[in-house]
Amino acid sequence: MSQEEQKRLVATAALSYIKDGIALGVGTGSTVDFLIDALPPYAAKLTAVVSSSERSTRRLEAAGIKVTRSARPASSISISTGPTRPQNTCI
Image (cartoon, rainbow, N blue to C red; front, side):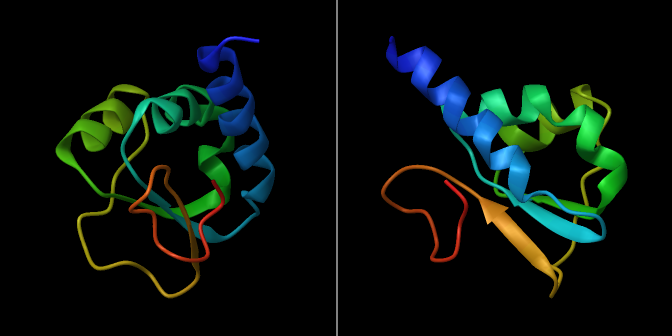
C-alpha cells in the first residue's frame, strides 16, 4: 500500500470521531487534505470548524465548509498530523 493510500485511510478513519454537535479543529498537511476532501457529508454535524492555517481554510471553504475565525470552541476535537500535533488529537 502506498503512502498516499495509507494517508487516505487514516483520514477516512478520523471521520468516525465526528459526532453531532462538536466543533472541529483542522490542522494542515497532506493527510488533513484527504480529510477535508471527505468532510462535506459530515459538515452538518459540526457546530464550528476552526483551521490552523490559511491553506486549510481555503481548502475547507472551497469544499463548502464555513470556517469559524474565532478562538477554539470548548467542545471540540482537533484533527492534525505530524510531530507538532497537540495532545488529544484524532490522527
